[in-house]
Amino acid sequence: MMQRNDLLAKTPITLTDAQSAVPAVGNKVLRNTYMLLSMTLLFSALTAGVAMAVNAPPLHWLITLGGYFGLLFVVTRLRDSVWGLAAVFALTGFLGYTLGPILNFYLSLPNGSQVVMTALAGTGAIFLALSGYAVVSRKDFSFMGSFLMVGILVAFLAGLGAMLFNIPALSLAVSAMVVLLMSGMILWQTSDIIHGGETNYIMATVTLYITIFNLFVNLLQILGVFSGDD
Image (cartoon, rainbow, N blue to C red):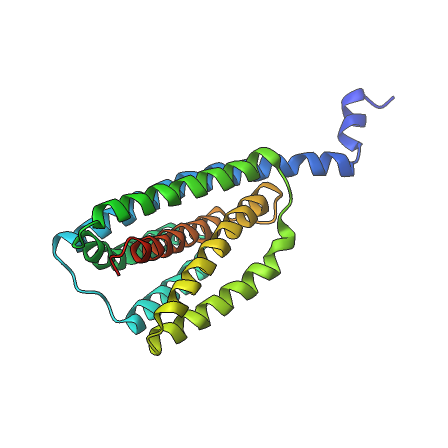
């Protein structure tokens, strides 16, 4: 007679069992993502502080884009190895360094410190509120993916046009668009992690970091304009 344990061992895994494993995997990835994200934000703040302390000049936009896309490519290639972590810190450290001259510019203005702190607080509030909502509600925001990708491409091209042709009104409109897109990205990426769509915490961290970075920079620009400092 077959033993009970043998019967249990031969019992096939049902679809319900497989589905119940998804939240556990998603929660683990989410914890790892938040932990790495916290560390990269601190490291980015450190490199930004270094750039501010040495009064580093702004990098040419071609160097900034080249460094960003180059390091992002490296992170993508190394995402499944331990070197992927080093690549993440290289990318976030580089972006933090490019942020230093921007912060120095705003802090040199009459209401600069207030603008910077308001943008920082606004970024933190938006991220915590939207990410928390996605975690608590556990809604699936995957339907937003295609719309967000198209919107980001349009915003990128419009931003380049505003910079090349020096159109302040277009630049402000792009910043407002980016704030909305990055808010949607927070919902989409957090939901993707929870529901098992993104299982690599390195790539999840990079996506959320870039989202927070763009959210902060564009809030800074909007607040600077409306405070009369630009």
